[in-house]
Image (cartoon, rainbow, N blue to C red):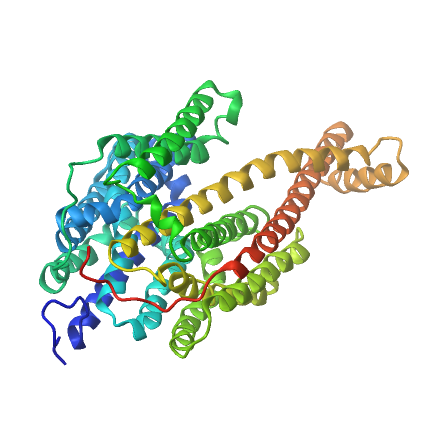
Length: 524
């Protein structure tokens, strides 16, 4: 079926299918790259002669560039045309991926990861706005479902995919795999994606001050979250300086964007429809999605002896269930289901998953015990993304769709970064507290402790005739047990706090209004 209106943004037939696959592929690549490097830190440190602190910049550089570019995507798209901007972004991402694999030093890799993040940052928000424009409003729920599959599956599949490549190939392959897909995506973008015929450049020049404040504020915040734990937070003058610059810049950015005529990020869209409530829910989604993908693999690999590939495989069934749920949720939205009720159900299920995890983790938890909680997680996430997208974009039209999409993506990313940072802080502080509590119950005057030490020492004496060495080894073993128990208790607390946080914010969804999706109009 051909497009009956040459000026309409809606596409039909094979052309729409190709465009949909192209933007979903690009989004999936970008999101996989947010987590694929996480499992390669040890390999990178060994091969590039870097410390773990230096390797952490490989992850931080990508995230910082990502979160800076995402909210500017709508403005950049209007300045250069969505086709040109999207094709250029895919090309930058692809070239940078190749150069990452060619890197011979850690700082060369950090530089190209930053460039890769600049290209990748545009792919999520721009992809979402393209889908919102090429589908008629009655089918946008299904489009959101297909896009959401990439958003949810990407961070989950990243560690699995990365672990497999690291185990079977050399580390540059985790970047080289992007290249052929990127080349195909550039070709398909140029051939099939059209520029918005109603999209015009903003008059009045570039908001350079707003752009500078955005880079300093959001980039500084991301840097603070990524590096704060390693630098001991506010004990470091460097981190304190970054934090102050970030706060001042964000306040200045908000003031600038609300008062300037042609803002680079239109924050006024927060006053429209359900955008303010929607981006808050996006924050929670990012918080739970990235937080659980961060803490569960650490627990499994650190205390249960799982490899990165085994850990990623454990997430796969739940991720597949998420993908299966999304089209069904999209169809239910097309039949009139209210997004806010589906979102409420999704977050309730997700909170149950998080609390369930707090009840099953022990020093010897079997992998099978995580199967059903992770299935529940997959079902909960399957109920969230599509209704959340519809709730945010419902009641909007024209440029507001791109602005809201960019803000939502940025806030989701920041939510994930804050979650990971808080988990790091709580892990250190709570584990120290639990360790102190556990040690207080151990005493050389305690009969049970004496009996345990003697039993272990006698067992060790079979391998050494030196009683002093056996006793020293015994205390080392006991210290290791206390260390493990302290962290297990810490992870239990973190899961409990995360569930409580979700439940406390959830009532906000009840204030959301009901809108039907609107097509992008000519007044862009």
